[in-house]
Structures are given as C-alpha cells and as structure tokens.
Image 1 (tube, rainbow, N blue to C red):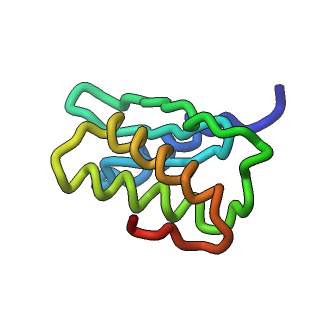
Image 2 (image 1 turned 45 degrees about the horizontal axis):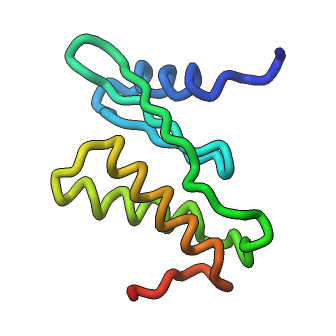
Image 3 (image 1 turned 180 degrees about the vertical axis):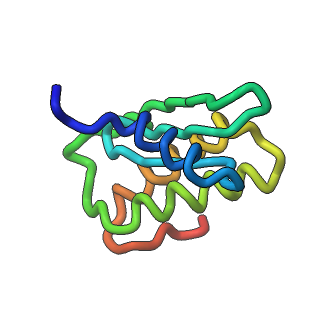
Length: 106
C-alpha cells in the first residue's frame, strides 16, 4: 500500500512541533483519529463514525466544523478526549441530516 499513513503523519507533526499536544483528523464515514503527546510518548485514539443511513444524508457542508465544535464543547467540560470525539461524531451525524453548514442549537 503506497498511501501515506495518516496516523504516522500525525505523529510526525507532533514530533516536529514539540509544544503541540494534540492532532485530530476526521475521516468521514471512517470516524476520527487523535494523536496525543503523553509523558511516556505518543498515543492514538480512534473513534468510529456515528452510524447514519446514507439515504438520510442531506448535506455534508460543515460536518467537520460541527465535529470539532462538539469535541471542544465536551473538552471544556472536562470530558475525556475519547468522549469528546464521540460527541463530535454524534453532532456531525445530526448535521448531515440538515441542509447548510449549521446545526440548530435545539
């Protein structure tokens, strides 16, 4: 397989930028991955995408932004990174069912 390995590239970014502590990538239906800098090295977390029937997808615009907003919302409320990524996946799936780049606050 000649494709670049996303996780290895994310680790490279963290190794190259010593003050950086976290890199997150969304991968659509493949979920998301985070690589973090820990005291004992680098750690990876993978979270599957929240399940949604393809026929229910209306618009993908803004799904990644909504994912990040959901994840940040959880992190500032002291949730774990994995739980934050799960919330991000959940709200991104809800957004996919709506037209436009925004998700209503309801």
